[in-house]
Amino acid sequence: MIILMTVILMIIMLICNILMFLSIILSKKSFYDREKSSPFECGFDPKSNARIPFSLHFFLITVIFLIFDVEIALIFPIILTFKMVNFIIWTKISMFFFIILLLGVYHEWNQNMLNWTN
Image (cartoon, rainbow, N blue to C red; front, side, top):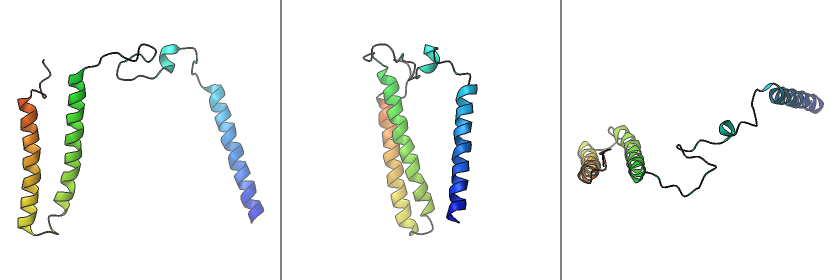
């Protein structure tokens, strides 16, 4: 039984090695093309100076998106606990959460963070 498993494992390893070798030989990848082999990072050239200024407004929009993305992920458990908790307690907790969410949107609106024009 152990011999059979060892033979099967060796055959699988041989097939994997053959396929990887064929993949390397038959691939049409060019290692000499600088633009295709370099990573693309948000429009910055990775071969240039690393201290290029970036848009602070774009960064703030990204942070806002992450905050609201996490808050939306927190809404799902509130919905799922509707049948498990008393309705009055559930309503108070949900309203408190949504008030905090709306106050955050109101604050961002007043600070003109949601405006793309400067």
